[in-house]
Length: 128
Image 1 (cartoon, rainbow, N blue to C red):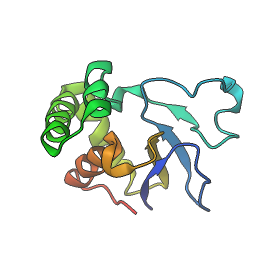
Image 2 (image 1 turned 45 degrees about the horizontal axis):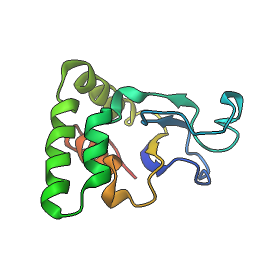
Image 3 (image 1 turned 90 degrees about the vertical axis):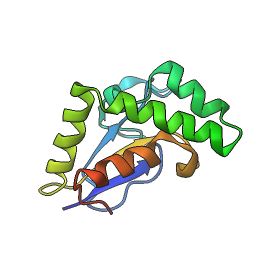
Image 4 (image 1 turned 180 degrees about the vertical axis):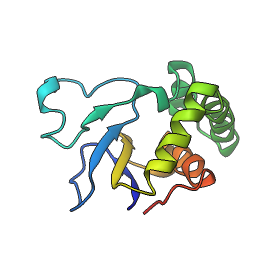
């Protein structure tokens, strides 16, 4: 069993399981009933997306220092009880089921999903 961190909208791999969208907003111009068929996500879970203000920090990060400020803020958001419990749940589920979490960003290194990957690993998630 494994948890994958993916770019939403990318082709699915065999056995990927349910795809969870950890994004603040649904894909633009896509009817809700087409989200799964077009490989966006099966379940929308914005709880693990950065807040709008934090997302703007990431989008505007031009230096490593800016990026570190985003990481610090996003980690603080994910440390809140509801978010922390959601991360614990996903880490536990990764021991027993195949599924994926993701975001739209092209470059994972400059996306909240890189931090999400680290947070899940810290909780013992079985990651691909």
